[in-house]
Length: 179
Image 1 (cartoon, helix red, strand yellow):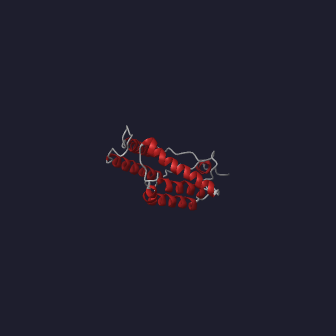
Image 2 (tube, helix red, strand yellow):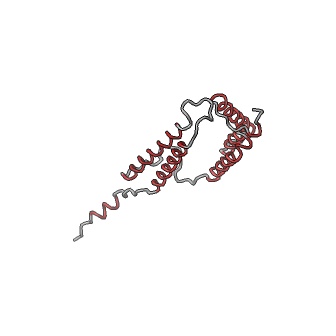
Image 3 (tube, helix red, strand yellow):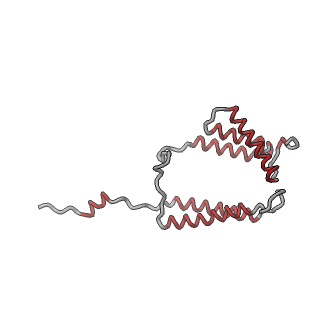
């Protein structure tokens, strides 16, 4: 006589593993909430009057974005608590198992830090040229002259677009009086 198979052992092998709650998603919610609070508090401390043409004032966009981040952080936290999870990236052309390209990320972060550090000294037109040309080079473009030319068009073009089009003066730096 043979003993009948235990149904719980068979079903345990074929049943899908229960979903585990990913608590790291709460860190994302906390970061979103912190950035939202920072934007709202910082926006409330802004004073108007530095832009020549600004019918809505400097507070509107930071308040809208900060409020949106706060609302989304609460919505995402509730969704996580309810067990909602995203689907795996099966349809995209991304390999989720490949390691990240930390060299490129580090170079881009360094370029942004250099941009922030030198924007007042060199001015937006020059540092914008360095930013756009450097980012293109870091991301793989090996056309050095074309990178600098396109970076210069974007850097100087955005300088004049802000100054003339929006009435917002960007730092001119060493080109003050020339631009």
